[in-house]
Length: 168
Image 1 (cartoon, rainbow, N blue to C red):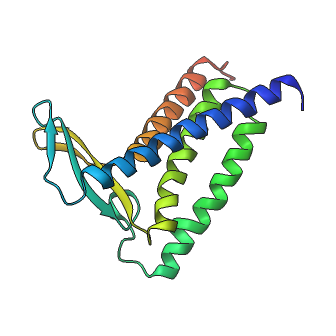
Image 2: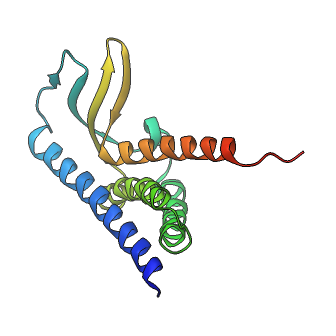
């Protein structure tokens, strides 16, 4: 492995470890300090800490599915995609910002996948952001890694499209 590839692999590994560790630590803290406790609010209710467990995916999608269907759609298929994505980001992408972005999305997904596998599909959620009635829904650090990664990826692609030469 040459020096450049080694640098991208190290960057991917560091990004993964940081994102995954922050998610695991924050969820352990949520279980320890929030489970069974009253809601905690900061900054005039713009940040609310409220413990819950989500047995589905985004906004509880699939929560009512059978275990077999959950294993296929919430564990099996995502796991295959994550493994390929980590390989792709680590060995094929030659842009540091894209490596960080792709690995952040994947590590967030794997953070929630970890919960699904080891907590019978229950993902710990505890963060709620918003102003007045406009709220995000309850989420976690893994969800933020995915969300911010996807937003950056869309911005990156739009900028790339704007700067690419136009053919007529």
